[in-house]
Amino acid sequence: MKLIALVGLFALLSTSAVTTEGCEVSDEDQKEYKTKHVIVLVIDGPRFSETFGDTTCQYIPHLAKDLAPQGVLFTNFRNNGKTNTASGHAAITTGVYENIKNDGSELPKHPSMFQYYLKTSKLPKQKAWIVASKGKLNVLANARKKDWFNSFMPSDYCGPNGNGDEYSPDIHTWKVVLEKLRVDQPNLMLINLLEVDTRGHSNDWPNYLEAIKRTDNYAMQLWEFIQSNDYYKDNTTLIITNDHGRHPDGHKDGFKEHGDGCEGCRKIYMLALGPDFKPNRVITDEYEQIDISQTIAKILHFDMPTSCGRVISPLFD
Ligand SMILES: [Zn+2]
Ligand SMILES: [Zn+2]
Picture (spheres, rainbow, N blue to C red):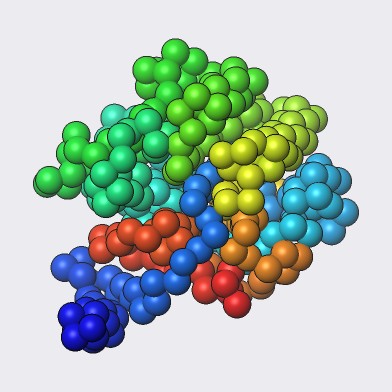
């Protein structure tokens, strides 16, 4: 009895701390969540003006009409760091805005949620997966920081051959996603789909819009898979978001490019569905990419002391 009281007292006393990186962390409650698995779907580079910023949501019918009513939608979500693919994804996975090279030649400095998760859970690397259309995103599996380089790395399949080279059509990536979900049953997964971004860079407006519709369809398929699979049903949180937006019309090259600090590049959305959230809510408070992994860490019960993000508390209100 006495030992339990002492453990409880220690837990109370250690409710908050300041990390060596100077970022506040708090882990005041050790609530049990229904969520046992988290999947993050990153749709690469749509502008908010073609997603939830368009009141008709004509290019994202599933996200707007089928998925948002089952989840919590954040309409003031932001990339407040470097608005390109590698840095945007790294902000999501590490909880730190790092300006890393966008060609896949530079690892993030800080360890990712995958590394912290595998270290804490002691699970094999098959339980944490990165599947990306863009080969260069295999940098997300590793970190430069001492004691983390080449350690606790998740599984990854990035690019058409899974080896970190080149770009893959989303349709191929999707087959890999479904195979990994069925065979390895990861508890933590990040998926990148590239076609919205690549059609944008091709300055191909009709196909850019079609790609937004196709990714909307993949998001729906993913949620349907989750809810029809015995391992994932009713115990999986799905987070759908973007790595960055794009320039607004009239600014530089408009929808063709991105990468600066303009509002079009910064503003994205985040939609979270899962058994621990109240459905059908829209949050207009500002949250940002670095908050995602800190929130996942709370749900899956591990710590990310190097993260600069906050727990996205309106999810749990
Ligand atoms: Zn791009
Ligand atoms: Zn911009």
